[in-house]
Image (cartoon, rainbow, N blue to C red; front, side, top):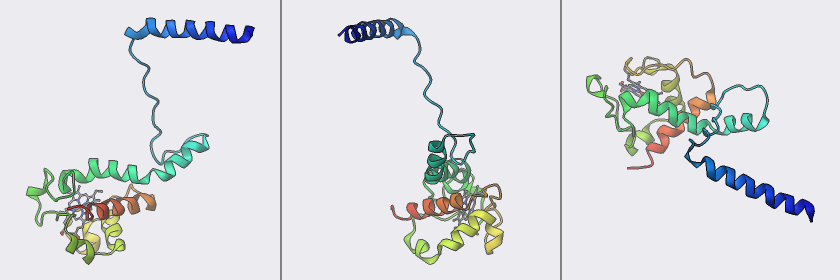
Length: 147
Ligand code: HEC
């Protein structure tokens, strides 16, 4: 019983304390480990990094591909007007079915020159993880499934 009373008292103190500190800024949110980042321990983080390729691809597309391909892959990025030929609309089902996954992964990894396309499409040699390249290909494929 004593323990229980102590617990309630401690809880009351804790609640009061937190109520008093309401005006203070909330603690910063826990920092999310970067996907694919190596870390010194924590198997949970390693697993999270492994399953997070889709999120990583989304992030890469938003930062790296959007300037030319547009935020939604419609070929309307800010830089697209200066490109000849301009990047196509990834939502075009006819184009989607005309290319295979290997082609998509190749142009994403090695750039347009490697597949006889415009050299304006850059290579991405720093993306050494094949799973990330594959996830980017999946991202482009997913765009093709929406109008
Ligand atoms: C500097 C501008 C630029 C950036 C950045 C860029 N691309 Fe491209 N991309 C192009 C252009 C231009 C083409 C069209 C090449 C052609 O049709 O000859 C292209 C073509 C492609 C194609 C093939 C489409 C087709 O017509 O067969 C894919 C897939 C692609 N890009 C994916 C990506 C991804 C994924 C990224 C980001 C990792 C990216 N691109 C970054 C300019 C860019």
